[in-house]
Figure (cartoon, rainbow, N blue to C red):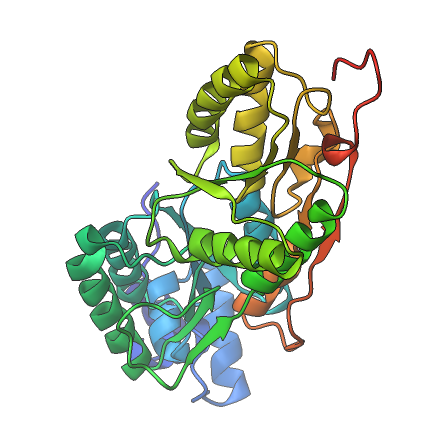
Length: 346
């Protein structure tokens, strides 16, 4: 059966189309209560379902939050998404999701789509990039966000500001102390590991990865240790796995005991899986630590040393949670960086 229209409701209630719209689409301009009651009764009798877009226009609010992440399958982003969802629930809003693989051009398209749907706010989670190949896309993304903010939208960004953005109203950044926390991790690991350190990082120019690399090198320097070798790879599990294969050959050939810092947990998981596939066991033959303390680590063996971040809280803050306290993380040392026990496999 065809859906009833607003015009049919207005006709049955004996009112104008504009009056019916004010009653059913949530306008602040309401007619007298007896008229409003006639309109509601007519709508119920006809089974009329209000149009969400019309309601958004009447209220100047769509009740929507747009969330942009690099990869929703990554536990880091799914934890942040839970926090955004919780904040949306408290605000009586719904979340629209876009997963962009970290491409600024795809992020710009997502912002434009959310703006076209009159989203009240947009949350962007994922590392910013200063890579030359992203320069033009960064400018286009910044222009799209600036336009959205000028039109009354609100933007929350996790980590770093959008490259090139000039918006100063309706825009806030949830700062994450990646560099300082990585320095703390390096300091603690340097106290127990006597050998060389290797960092498995993302592509150069990826801000989150670069912050963590810089912090870890600073922590080693403060502890009086040599700088770590840096291996650049994909900022994901596959990148970690590829690096792990190369490191396995090196460890088997030299017998060198390395302490490996992967700049996020999924990369650390990839490195560990590759080492294990080549007969190199953690912590018997090498040590490894990650960063983020994602939920997946509860089932990962050996238990992975890492840096805890309150990811759900970060999501809530980015979505406008009134609790605007700073993000605080902590180092979590676990079995993957312990000294080996004789006869231990992993």
